[in-house]
Image (tube, rainbow, N blue to C red):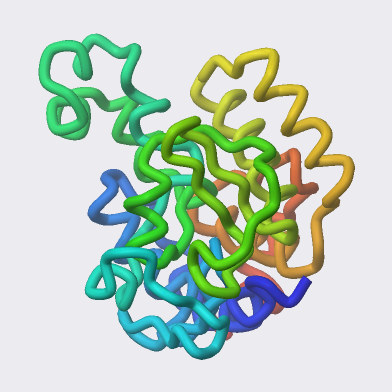
Length: 238
């Protein structure tokens, strides 16, 4: 439950951006995300604390699997991978992600959606790649005490328990917002995670803060009050 709790608390730093326009590109989204999660916060997959771009591995007992240099830094991770957003689009067929990022407005909006963007240990971000989420036999030691696991042969990732519900609700949101197809197997998994791991206070707060930037919340998390973006604790003037 404490996973991302610090991140949610630090979201107060977002208030000056509450009336900013939604980011138009992934590059813009990453810049906004640094402020969204504040200069010192908690990363997504392992619950490590970080300051600036540097991971505090000792804070979560993280041990690099292979790439210590990449494990030491924060990267911005799409919960729903860019590949899943774009691989069926014509731009991807002709020029991959680069072509979609340059020429496909619908793809650019999805790629820049802050509801789908989280801070991740770089090594875990790279290992996750575009693998789907699923259940794996519980093991320990792949990343030290980090509970997220990657099965490279099966191309599956089992995230730590405290973020499974948010992952499910993000997939439902992205599927609805951008007309992305979910397989029957994925939908059943995410329905189970959504039920088993309901939103925690930090997720409600994050949803409200992101809504103030995007102009919409994730309805699968809960209702947001866009008036609060200009009034009350989310006001840009406070």
